[in-house]
Image: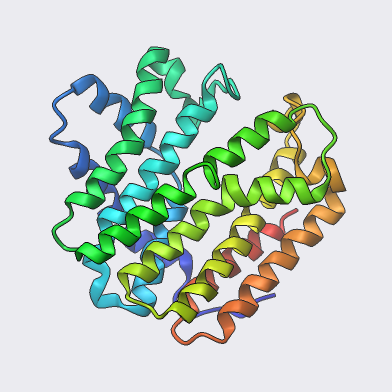
Amino acid sequence: MLKSYMTSFDSFAKKMLPTLEQTLQKCLETLENKSLQKASLYALANGKRLRPLLTLATVASFSPTSLKKAWIPAASLEMIHTYSLIHDDLPCMDDDDERRGRKSLHRAFPEWLALLTGDFLLTFAFESVAKSTLLSARQKADLLLSLSVKSGSSGMIGGQIADLTFQKKKIGWPSIKKMHLMKTASLFITAVELGAIISNLSLPQRKILLCFGEKAGLAYQILDDLADHLEKGGSDQIKEKATVVSSLGKKRASQLAFQFLKESEDLLCGMQKADLLLSFVEWMQQRAESF
């Protein structure tokens, strides 16, 4: 069990969320196409905002005076995550009827509008970072590269292709791990990388944070797999998806989650000013103990 940190991730999130929500609203308020605006706001609503909160937590830890520069990149990361959920839910992919506690976008709006809203949020994320007046040209280039690589063929899109390809197949842990690294962990890695870029951290510090993002992202996905396994009629079970639980069983999956959380903690314990990120690991540890 991790120790308790002075600033809990929960209290930090409560402090940051109002401004993060305002940033998302402000980004979209001047959009001329009101149908697209309405669909975008619907899709963005009710999110946990874990990925942008990790970006903000990284900046708040290592360069708190730079926090004002982090709102747009953090919001852009949430746009990319939301775009991926919109497309994941479409009939041609996972065909899910619900998302974030209500109808998925293609059920609440025409399917064609849902598709285009996902496209819009992806491209608008890059536009928002590129137009920011608070970031240097070098920071913009590095931020845009991170966002594009981690959401592309070697990241989230590649992971989604693997997820759909593996459906109804018996897949071993090495392949599932690679899939989860791309589909889920990639945006956790990006979250801390964005924070490191904004904070102007050294290359050795960035490498540690990228490894932390990888381990934390894998742990988070395993916990999601466990939650679906415990839910009667969970969507992964219905679709016969390849998951850590289906490959290794509940006990081994739980052990792996704790292993990755421990590795996340070990990576950060040697860094100064990392207590806030460690409290995020503690938050996930508490979730893991419920399984």
